[in-house]
Length: 264
Length: 271
Image 1 (cartoon, chains in turn brown, purple):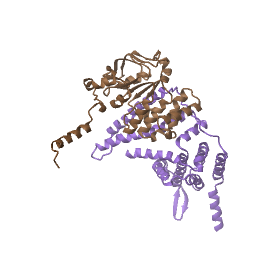
Image 2: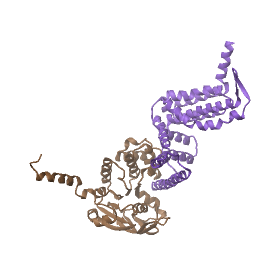
Image 3: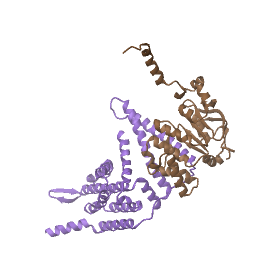
């Protein structure tokens, strides 16, 4: 797996109940790229992510990770390369303690106990959760859970990091910490999100999904400037690219005064 | 229903207590587990009319609670919470078994009443001991000890998953129940149809969640075997001493009936 390329070739997927998840998605992501996956609710973002490590297998079309096309036989090696952080950390943290949870993947990969312990400690330190090691996951706050969920994947040092809504339900400071952390990850990142400000900060490239199809794929700045496209996908320009509402209001409030310089 | 999630959170308080520090906390979990199992077997092995011979067994939970600095009121409340089950088991005994066994003054006590008291006493002793064990050891350490003592791994994994997701399910049920009560203004309890869809929804959500958890496990290389780090240290003198000491005491309590002997001695002295 030399190049860490992620390639989707005309993927189609329909859920058992008939809902169309993906209707022909194609793209190619090369090593080290950081890509945001945006789109309205139900556009197919999560469905697409689940195809990238074989949680779902496409009905037609194929997924290429590195040198090989994903199939049931190479699932293990693909999952080793693609680390996936789920939307709900409660689904990802199933072991009795935080420490065990981060060690779970490592021990499955065949790490020795000593190596596993060392890497668990490092991963927890990286996400700023070193002090939580002995705690049971259900006692953590959502922000802590999210950090630990990232550590569980981080510890396995994946070549490709796939995240589903990593900034959802985080308080602003935890969110900035998350962004700073993700900036240190130099391999390929694919992040599905509604947080377009975060996408603008982290990802140079953005893919827009709409009703199971790719409607745009390009430089994040260009995509986010295209208001028509954003509107179609129930998205809005990131706040960072809008005129600041506070400054605008302040300016409006100030303006009548400027006409009456000799007022009260 | 609000109480359901409240009570579950309250149970997790046992884990908080288990994080404490006392000589009893520091004992090997296996030692505490073995003694507690022996205690439970000894207590339930008496015949159904036994009351006085059970009394000395109260020593074990009392020692655990006081030496382990466990809040006794909290434990009592937990015992009362599950007490209805024990009452249900024995409630019909006084009606069925009416042979009079004892006379105290003018009152006669039938075998049914005696066995009901005996059931309640055993219940209190065993539940107190089990809760004290959890409060001194923590659920996960108990699971690990079960594993090292030879319980098959699938059972232990099942048990720890149950414990992990009990809280998630409880909170979910609590939220749904609250959402329902906020929109039902007549203050009625949940009707049968409502309850049907309530529990059905919870079941479906649980299945969905199980699916997602399984996926998350697969993503991290799960192959049907849950790996675990061994962190049990070797038993030391104090552990062995703790186990042997209590086993000897239980043996004496079980076969020599110190309470009965003491009673016979006292009444003998006064006569």
